[in-house]
Length: 209
Image (cartoon, rainbow, N blue to C red; front, top):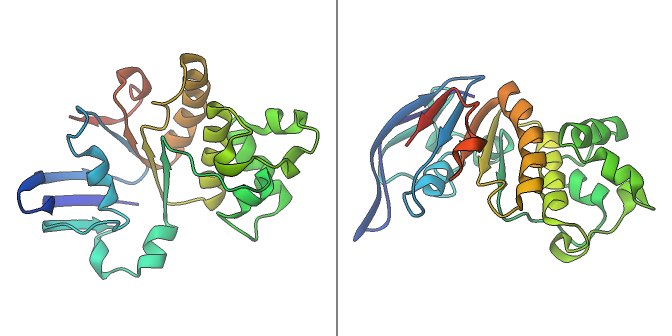
């Protein structure tokens, strides 16, 4: 899970340079937080790791190998991303979770849900895991959708976890609940946190501005 950015430049077009000469290292088992104003390039930066975009100059390496030389499916299977926009399909909670790992056992599902602090809520639903969440999860609250999304990423069990403004669209009570779920998870893996709020990234090993 070691990630190195070496003199990275990136732009969506030649007129607007988004990232300029970015160099840093994320060591295995540590957490880095990225903070900065809207439009500073935080999300653009993390999108370079799973190759949603490629660098204009420089390199991004994953465990000492340039990401452009790695098999794309393998690379993305080792990276889990939780964004502020939660993507849930119009199916059951179980189906949404199994999208990350179709062969997961019931015990695996329960463990991931407990880690994401959503299991007790699911147990109280009349149909439990087989509750239909609606299109984009509209039958659930924002905090509940976000915790299901976190459980799905945990079920995938990636080497690298990325939380991109995972709590920014939630109210303060939901944000606190999600934060309590995220902190021990991030501490147990190699992680990148993006946030506007200092309170959500104070436990990080390093903060990049």
